[in-house]
Length: 200
Image 1 (cartoon, helix red, strand yellow):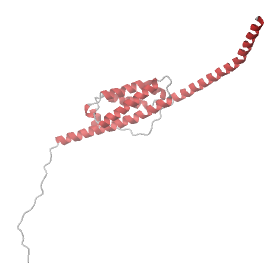
Image 2 (image 1 turned 45 degrees about the vertical axis):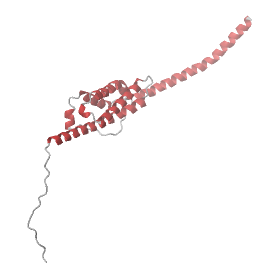
Image 3 (image 1 turned 90 degrees about the horizontal axis):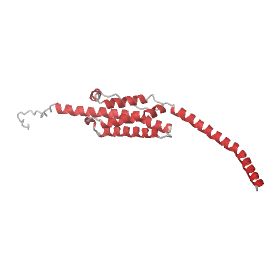
Image 4 (image 1 turned 90 degrees about the vertical axis):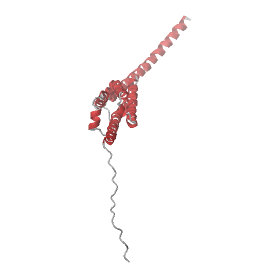
């Protein structure tokens, strides 16, 4: 029995020695793949965000004057402008601030801007920045997913500015219509004269 036990131990030892190079090779391959993935992630996260072509909108003088004291709008605009030079990693690190700025924008919206187009554009911004924040909070966040959400935010903010301009323009036109006196409608002057008899 003792001889058999020694033989069995010897067989097990030989089997383990044969398996060791296999496991060692597998571990080396796993580490190699892991390092490669880390390198690819590093490149992806240091890449600058690519934005689609879109028009940058300036606020009209009246809109600029009306929003001068709306600090949350100014803060949101600064956050969006900063994004234009961000890498994917920069966006990931600032996602919470970007989301908070859009949430504050929604909460402090002036009464005169409670129009359907403006509310719809703010809802889009809150949704996009919320999804961006969720994506970056993921332990295995994907760079391409972060970039997809981030690239849509500046164009969406410019769309908001279009409708802010429009809301204040319509408000100004309504005000002017109330202030300007209604002009009387003049009836056409009909000249009267003797009725001429038809010549025979």
